[in-house]
Image (cartoon, rainbow, N blue to C red; front, side, top):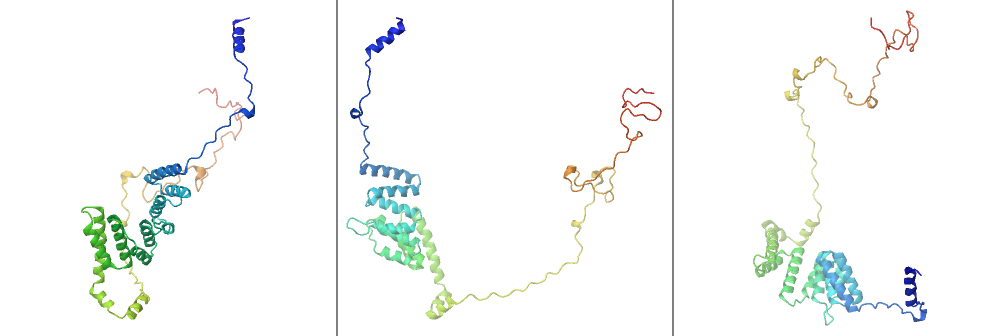
Length: 316
């Protein structure tokens, strides 16, 4: 027995044969258990923070919907979705969602009321927004300043510039110096003061003293018709054209040899184009016939000599 055969024989004799196990004794693969709801919500919140930091607002709103499907009363998810809808300018959806934000006692929360007022303000429903602002009860200074800003914006939009000026003046006096809030309130305060000065002018004051029926008739009156204008003919000048439009004198140093300016016809403007592409094709004359009358090579001519095509001719 060769050494290779001996090694194979020992390996076969030392290793028992493995028979397939019956199906009843096989271990079934373990089924992966789903994560608890709390862990899934925590994972969604981590994704939500990353999406908000990256500016992916639409995806963040979808993540809020995933959390709310698992926990419909999660106040953090509801408040975050409301803020995202307002930031994404989806005011109708934000208005509908603000009704579901309640506090622990079942009443409307501050975030829900403030979001509702802002959505109504952006939907140009200023009166409803002003009614909501009146029932908001801020809990801290930060919330109170937000309500003050909202009330000032609503009054400015409604045309109550005196009240808006007073509110912006209060915000300006109470804001930190050299802050963005102070600079913004100063701009709004200046705009309100400008409108107040315009309304308090003498002619406007006298206009507002008129009866309300006259004011309404003036406001509803159509615009006056425009005066018809007639076209005035412009006299044409009979003067000869200026000397600048006259032809300049041709420099003879630039004229080619054999060309007389004004006498020699100008060159063909299509001389640089292929003949097949020109608009006008000039056919040249036919070639003159030779003395042989077009005879082929080797034909007889006068004198009895044979033509050899011009080859091996002796010079005389």
